[in-house]
Image (cartoon, rainbow, N blue to C red):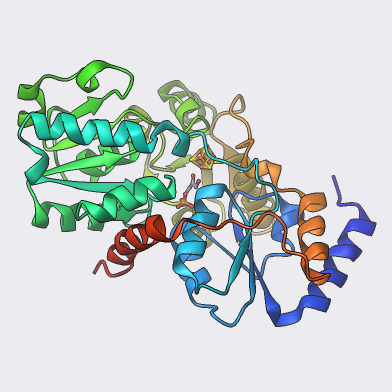
Length: 354
Ligand code: 13P
Ligand code: SF4
């Protein structure tokens, strides 16, 4: 549905009043009505870098989810203020690893005698506490666009990787991109004593995968890949690495949201694509490329939007911008200084990856 013209006008006026004082970042999964007001759009890696590249902006309005706004706060200067237009915009995957659970896991690894040779690699989709744990124990952050480089780096520092919190990105990168076998990976279940693993299993593994997943990408199935191949002969299947291993193994192309966009930009007219990622992005791409004769469909019609990404809508954005224009900072995301300093260590290791 087209946006309410009154809200569009109010967003424009508030942004104009704020001028260079405000910088609006929009993740690719955001609604069209929000993307329209983003100064920059990107995947989570690009947005982290872009947030850090605007030290002159007093306010960073982050249209995305909580962990992204936290990362922006960690990477920006002390007097820059980061605003998340709706505080309920969390990420169910990030919530699957709490600081207590991860500390307990480290105790289990210590007990099994493997903590000394284990390097934590945490997906950007994690809380600042988890990023701080990672920094403290010599590890790095990664995103879906640099997971392989992060793992290569980690295996130069140690013998094993504890990969948090997305089992799928960890497994897919290790097996699809780095040639490890499924047997090199074990799954640590934080809800079971000792993660549900024996000390021997931990000692034998190269990749210790945290049992977390994305509730949106986890719903694409091998069946949806088979169905779309049958329905659309010659279709290219392009999915995000948060999808399950069998889906990724059956796909033709795998990559981050930014990679998905670049791949479609470079695709020839007349090509057909089924995309397995969040629906706002797939719809936007289908509309954008329809005129160029590229057919783009959603991989599985039963999968829906990321409900927390969708929480940021035009009314919330207008409220945040108008408040800032009146000098009132609402929904500020501020990471505790000690947590921030260790998280920053881990984030900077990622930014320095070759
Ligand atoms: P990217 O934008 O890094 O591909 O991440 C996808 C995602 O799920 C963010 O929550
Ligand atoms: Fe989290 Fe998945 Fe939503 Fe990304 S798409 S914010 S990983 S729940």
